[in-house]
Image 1 (cartoon, one colour):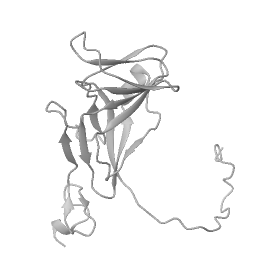
Image 2 (cartoon, rainbow, N blue to C red; image 1 turned 180 degrees about the horizontal axis):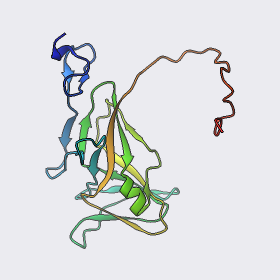
Image 3 (cartoon, helix red, strand yellow; image 1 turned 30 degrees about the vertical axis):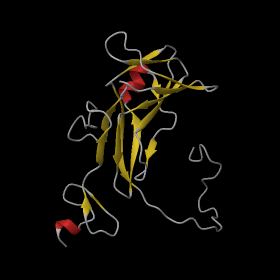
Length: 188
């Protein structure tokens, strides 16, 4: 078997289904010329940091009762949005990307954004499928007791690439094979 035939190529790539060709990259398309490429902070980082892209865009907010759009405030030189306590926002990243078939991009909050600011992701981890064609977005919620500021270019989340398996679902009797019943807290 040659390197080109390997399912996991020499750089950890992913085989395209039925093609015999290894795809070793995520295809990345900037929607604006100054968008930053997702970047790993260290050689051993699993996640690729991504940044908020707020220049010239509108951002969707939700208070739970209403959804509205608002452009960034740029009165202080760097565009930013303000997020009230409990409010949710969908932050644009300024790019589209395509992951190989059989791979999902998991979006997770950066630990520093969670700890220092009180930002969370209500749908963590967010999933971006290989066939999602539009701009990548991050849903955030302000769980702090104060209004938070998110700036253009701020590293707000990480993308972790993960393989997944698609299996058929078949109806049948599951049965009980252990004493682990009752759901949450079933192991003690």
